[in-house]
Length: 419
Image 1 (cartoon, helix red, strand yellow):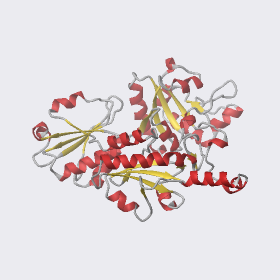
Image 2: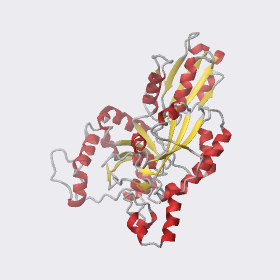
Image 3: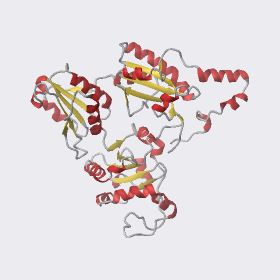
Image 4: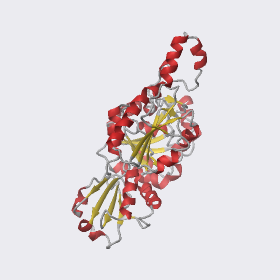
């Protein structure tokens, strides 16, 4: 996390009353006007009274959660309002898209409902379902408008011959639908699910002659195709009611959001904000076998640790900096490490992952404080199982590097700082 002087941030404690008294009256009036001038019109004000109707009646809702006393909120608000006006011009049809704004001081219930921990927070709700991912891109009119356009694009790619499916990227998870035509209720449900989960899976569909060999007439089929190059997961066919949105959405989500995720520079802030320590496999991007092995071990032995830790893989070439902090280079890949947001701790040997209980014991040493204790005082006395101990003096794990990718205090007012 980037550390900045207090003067660069909005202070969530808001002791501004005493501060304003130290300024001349004219300056105080100007500051008050700056902090409370929110453009009329523009984004739709969202309150406890209209939130449910707004979400239920629009395909896409883009919400700006702000506080009038926050400097960053004030800088964003006129930009967001102007973008809202442009979006209304681009998509004038009712029920398509709404850009809304939530005053979190006045609408604390709405803010709590969406677990707001920083200002401003920009959330996307598709078909009434909040997206796991916030908007974290550029804060400009053009960027917001382009983002909305992309969100409203059809996420489903149509194939016209079954042979086209043989050329799809086997590093991606996919949901493939086989339908008679677009003009059936089941396809509308499929499209809504695809819109919600397009960031997690690729969606493909075939109609009529292009897919008739894959399903009985009048009975659409939906299948999951795993990322075979990176996992040992099996392909599956959905056996539930395709016309039931909730059931299909749950089934697709369980298969498209994997237990082990890849961390990138694009999603690092999001993953860091979840607040869970990272167990990371650093690997060469050309090495897919170690990724398969790591995923298989996590799935078979660490499933019960999911609430406590984020299981991740990382491109060791792109994330060479954390390797350097561990005293390693790309020639040492693959390797496994924990980032606790205080320190990084390296798992002794990648091969030890295959020894029953070793990786789980490594995590338990994190939870118990043993890894941190050994950092300060050296290894504990050897036990019968001493393969996880480092001999020859105190360990020296470096400080967390991924903490620096958390939401920055020069971009947000943070209501809590737990990392």
